[in-house]
Length: 143
Image 1 (cartoon, rainbow, N blue to C red):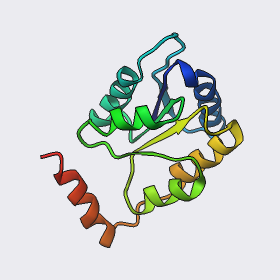
Image 2: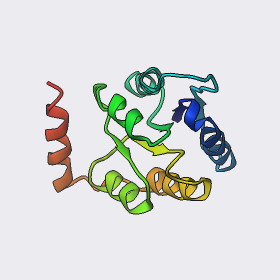
Image 3: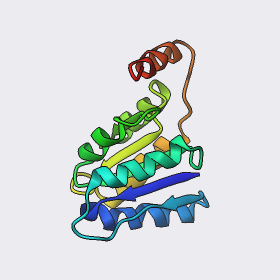
Image 4: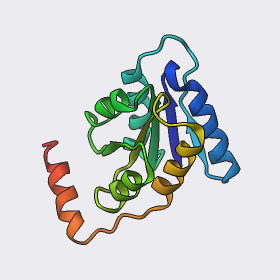
């Protein structure tokens, strides 16, 4: 299960992502929002809480740049969020960092690129091995 959310700046991109997930038959929960203005930390918290509680495996957070959502998400225990503006970063944040939240900016990436980034993120598996030790080190920083 994927959980998605956006602030007002990325509401249109969220709808594109949601439609893409539906077309790919990937189950999702849409945490909105279409309200303007909206506060991205609230949306990040709602999305990440669903991951923490086990209702979703991964999250997608969208705002103007992706940066604010990423900063907020990474404050939450168990979350490894990454801003991706191209597919290379999306691939390696999954392969090496086991990221569980993808952040993108609606003012930075267009619809076509966002779909490619999303596809790369969702279908790239964590390599584990030597990278697991580093992911464990990251997670130990929460203690």
